[in-house]
Image (cartoon, rainbow, N blue to C red):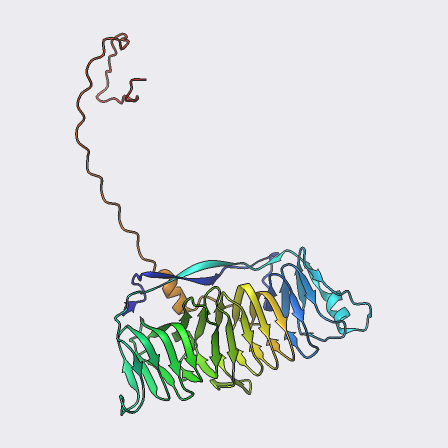
Length: 377
C-alpha cells in the first residue's frame, strides 16, 4: 500500500498536459492535429473547433465534416484542397478559418509506481475458489496470471491511498467484473491481455482507476471491454478498441468507456465503439472507423476519420486527474550525498634549494588566504 504522498520506486513514462500557448486566447477544441487531419468519408464529422499545427487539412469539397466550429491553422498549416465552389461546405469552412500562432504543447512526464510487489502466483476466479462473491484483494499484489473468468473481484483500498495490482497476464470472460471499495484508487499494471470481455469499475468513478500497459510486442486488443477508468499504452504498442460492451449511457447513447486514453502507440477505434473522455496521442496517429463516437477531444500527431466516425466536443482538457497528479508527485527523493572522509595527510615536500625566493610578506589581519598550485606556480 502506498499513501498518495509517499515515494514509490519504478519509472513509467506518461504524457502530461502543459498549458496552451495560443495567441493570447484559449481555444476550446474538439480535435488537435500536430501534423494534419484526413476526413476520408462523407459521413465522418467533428463537432467543435479544430486546430492544425502543421501539415494539411484534407477533406473533399462537398463533405460537411465540421459542425458548430472553426478551423485554426497554425503558421505552416493549410487546406490541401482549396474549394472552387462558393456554395460548397468546404468553402464555408475555408472562408471562416483563422490563421496565426496556434500551438498546444504536451511534454513527457513520468509516473512512479512500485516494483517488486509481493508475488502471489496465479489466481483464477470462479465458484470453486470463491463460493461467495466477490473475491477480495486488500493488499498490493503481483500475479503471474490474474483471470477474472466470469466472477467478481473486489479491490479494497482506504480513502487517500492507492492500491497497486500487477498482472503479467490479465484474462477475463464477458462476465468478469472488478469493483473498487473503500474510497481509494487503484492502478492495474498489465503486460499481456487475453480477454473476451470485462466489466471494470462500472459502479465507481473513472478517476479512481488507471490501467497501465507495460511494454510488449503484442497489440492491446480491448474486445468487449466496459470500463470506467483511464488507460495508458506505452511506445510501440498499438491499442485497438472494439466491441459493444455497455459501461453506461450518456446523452441517450450506450458508452463502452468513460475515461481518457493516454497513448504512445497507434490507436484504432473500431466501428460502433463509443467513449466519454479524451484521447491524448501527441506522438502517433488516431484512426476512427465505422460509426465510432468520441464525446470529448482528440489530441494527436495525425487524425484520420473513416466511415461515419464522430468527435463530438469540445472536450474538457483534463489530463492531470487526481490519480495522475498523485503519481507524478510521488517522486522518490534523491539519496543524500555521503560526506567525504578526509584523506591521509601528505608528507611534507623536501626543500628545493633551486626554488626562487622573494622578500618577506607580512599579513597583519587576524586571518588570511593563500591560493596557489601544488607545483609552486
